[in-house]
Image (cartoon, rainbow, N blue to C red; front, side, top):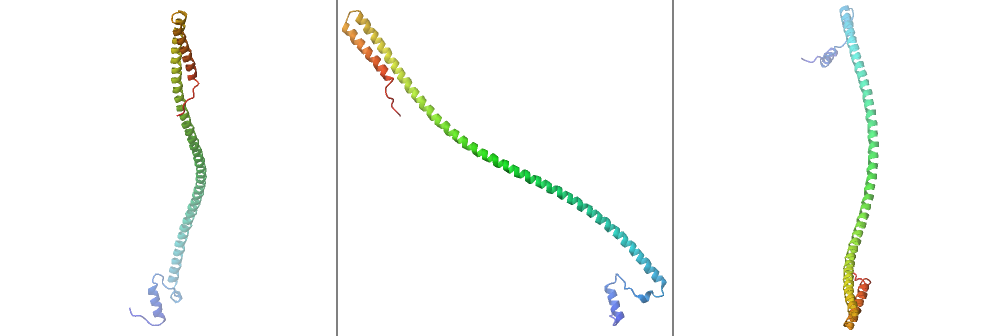
Length: 193
């Protein structure tokens, strides 16, 4: 379409550009009741449409406000739950720290107890070794005492029978000597190993 010059041409070009809304021309409505009535009906229809839209918007706004309040309540609940969880977490960390300290103290006590057990085992082994040595000494002392007693009794019998008095005296001397040696074996110094 060829462009028209002048005021009307600009108006038609603008109408083409904005064709959805016709421009309101007062001269078209002067002394034309049908157009005025139609304009009035259009305006009433548009007002009704806008009222429906307004009610829809108000309803949507009310729904959004209710949702916003619900979200705020949920947010407050979530924040309180987060606060409780943070407090529980802090308490759990404190308990874990206490337990770790106790565990560390228990580890130190266990180590000290293990050292004491080791020391007692060494002492026990030494005591058993000494007991074995003492048992061997006691056995040696007992054997020497028995042999000395046998020799002494034979020497006494020989001496009292009046035969070989000098043999009896020598046997008594050896028996007493063995008794003294057996007695001194118990007091002899113990060699350290």
